Image (spheres, rainbow, N blue to C red):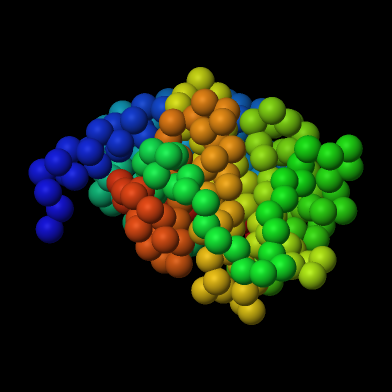
Length: 270
């Protein structure tokens, strides 16, 4: 059972999450941003993204109309192939997921939002012999290494990795994003990003999938620790991560706390 101190700490972190990491903070690098009531709508190439801090107590028909307008907004743009409506487990109303589903959006797997002090993750982690960590975005032409990293992430997660989109985001967020890899025998075996959130004390850690034959050897933990040290050197206090069932226990053992869940709901052009 969580102590009252832990409960207070979790609530304080959740308050900071809602205040600092939603709405405009999630749309850094978007090529276009519009508003509709409580919603912030962003465009990233062929993809759209919907975020908000809360839904202004919208329920029932008014909420259905907002969802329908959002679908119509993206459907009217021929270049958009899909958009994500990012929900959180503590959002109201509780029937929002059912309403999104009723409008044809498909729920992806939920993830746990982890938050905490970057210093908790920064202790060095021993690497297996022959494994080294390297930052790849700070070179004149990072594309060859990005392609190698993308191939490793496809092996790790089993889904295509949008290399061109990532390259564009690296260019757009040159001073706000770092891309780190773990390598062995010339192959990328794990890759992950550090993304600073402008105007906040936060940075996000994303990716980190390890190829199957290297799992269970501390590679993910070492890559997290490296990114945490880099974040601290840049003045970041807190780290956050949308974590899978595999990464959550590692981050929680390091001291990050689960504050809520997040489930992407995806609209795809038919």
